[in-house]
Length: 185
Image 1 (cartoon, rainbow, N blue to C red):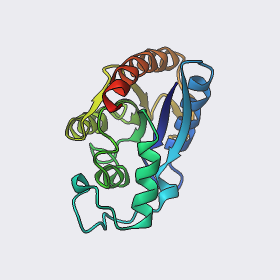
Image 2 (cartoon, helix red, strand yellow):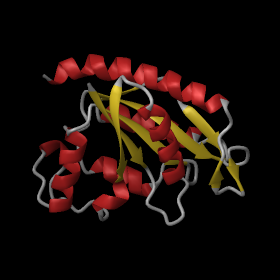
Image 3 (cartoon, helix red, strand yellow):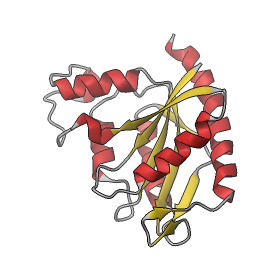
């Protein structure tokens, strides 16, 4: 069975990502096609990239990097929950992605984003990064509006249509994740 990490892409105090990730987890966990877990990058205390060697060399020196690498290595696919900060992804998420290389390779990713434009621009940038990390990203994504899916921009109250989009994205993620798993054996 696939192991899918729901990655919280923000470390900001009062972040909306936590509510959204819990919603994704609750809906996904009702399915019987994968094991899901929330992975909070905040828990790994990753400082601004402090490894002396490029991630592609896999010569990690720091314990926080080794712990992060083990977690990502243990997963078959990812759901990135991200807000849009200044037309892009949060710096903490970019930093967490840059720490590793091989641990991301030949896996699949889906996106759940939020922002004034649904977080679409953050996901556009994530798709470019996924290509470099050799992660296959699925087409369907869940776009949440800060104006209509959050009360006072902070209390998550998603419209019903997002549940259908989430399940469509999960179906694609399971298919791609299963296919790519065979490449890693």
